Length: 185
Image (cartoon, rainbow, N blue to C red; front, side, top):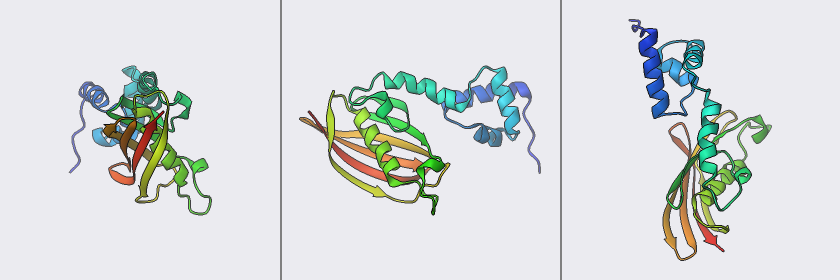
């Protein structure tokens, strides 16, 4: 039985609420949620002056980059979307064909590691730090076009050592985990 479509006014009110709750939701996800075409979602966003996903991510990232002390903005792999120094951080990376092995189309591990390490560095509140220890595990392969979401948490601070756990997921499936000990100089 086909589901009843919402009126434009109600759909737009709910669209605003959905984007406020999750600014990183895609037009495709919204179109599935509201059972309308992607073009309808885009027209609604334009009418409501809501920027596209990339612009929303960029706006959030700009605010968070200013907080980072350990590394430069350009050294963070991915878009930094949330940061609370010495507590937690979140970044997003859209993978593409330039990051993969030609034969298998699997994203090279150094991109995933660099994302995790740079987020671990960004989340600590110190001027200079180095990675002292990294215990990492790649759980499943990542393919070109998949969106990586990295979440870092500072679990302990002991003198000049920062213990940071980083988990990277594609949708809700964990693809990588790393435990870092960063040493403040």
